[in-house]
Image (cartoon, rainbow, N blue to C red; front, side):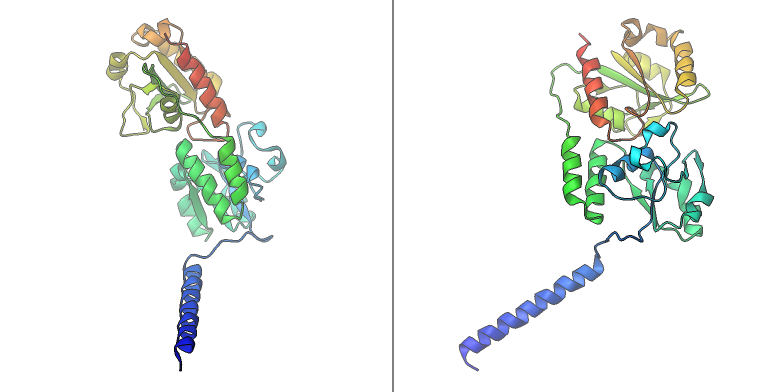
Length: 290
């Protein structure tokens, strides 16, 4: 065998080796391909909006507080409840290939879905950054890379750098009169930070924490954002009753009337595609503080 023949043989063997390695890696990390038989269920309105924007068909969607919260083309699909009241009978009846669940709500679904041998996949919508990561993940999984890139570009935010950072307290109210603080790592807290504010009065180790009146009074926020997780009219009435009395009535934000009540679909505990609207509103509130 002459030198030229040996070089050709080495090149051929190298090509075969690389080819074998490529197919081995493909086997270990298979590309999920959506087919007409793929049956997908989403369990939050936020992820339903994302699937709709990426043009990924669904067979079931969550039961929203208002039908208008769901994308128009998906409003007639079967409803499977939500994390407050999951309709597992409906989920099972739809024979899904996969059920997508928010990472923060897995405990509400995992056991029963496993018992029915239904595949559950989690998506992280904790904040703006993880929302973008989830969109990228879905784009790659369902061959919607271009749509995913376009969607991420559409919701792109420009962070604000300011010397003075208004102090912002974020509260999430619940039916019954209770409320929790939300820290800088929460969805709304992340937007406040990007907009040039400083989140105060919360436990920085926990997204949602039990409010400390002493900590809130000491922080004396310039702005207070009050989110109603459900039943907004009742929650707002409870907030108003609490804020009419000391020590909340004496806070700078209350005295200067920089207290804002927010609700879905623009504001929510986790990220959604209304992020630019929420971000713009927060920037306007921060700009009002002298």
